[in-house]
Length: 413
Image (cartoon, rainbow, N blue to C red):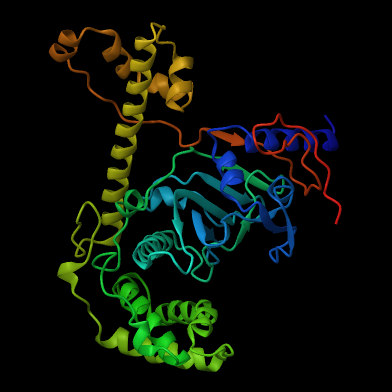
């Protein structure tokens, strides 16, 4: 098969995933803006309907005022090649999608979450909770701290990238929070008193940045340096510069870089030297691990718990599929169970003890309890093959609304 025909086959394969219900790729199409920003570079200067936007290597995944994906940018500049699977070593749950640069290994991790409204009329506390979870996960992943949530990301399924879809599960924020230590004592704790700083850009930025500095300083003292901590505070101030100007009583220009540096340095120096926080009230996750334990040991225990939770969840899904088939009077075939449970046949075979429990009478199951073996389930449900060259159109991608996939031309501008 020639290079052209291979690329066309990859395009067709990718487009089928976009319009196959129950997949993470299909959710991307459903949750993205109807008119999404997109481009063949990070500027994403074009605006296209989502059917056409997925043809471009960069896309706007979240709608304005609504976050449906937590996206993490893995650069890892200190390494020769970034590690898109670092979430496993960090004790975090598997992302839905891993979109990787074939050459550098740099990747975007997509976590599907129950949508959070972020408009001006939205409640502030759920937004603060989401940000706390995001920042805690980003710190665990060593993700790019300057990457803004909701920014343009690599388009999953595009032939430029290597896209791996692990599962279609939609996480709740509370579910993700179980895997990390939230910096704030509670998502409903006190926050910046912006009403007291109204009318002053410097005071508003100070209020926002100091609470962020409080939330990360203990972690940075443990495994980082003052210089690294100061860079994080500076990045936060820079990313919130526009928000500060919008909150000003009158239309105001953005603060200069010198002003941002001065504010960040003032906050950083005092926080690093004096702030210790109420460590007795810090939320340490579901395991409530003692912070005196070494970081590597806490990560190992968190990863072990993650494995156990994943193992139990998979067992529950297979058990439920068995009950559905038995209720319908159908045979417990591995292919049928895999289809209902949303897993692979190999996974069903690994959990053979669940099938044995479903087949045997209840009394026998009680007299002869089964011993659960180690879960060797592969993380990937399937990997989306794609060509290695950029493409112009994706043949075979159908329109939304349940229509069959077909060719669609680029809209005339």
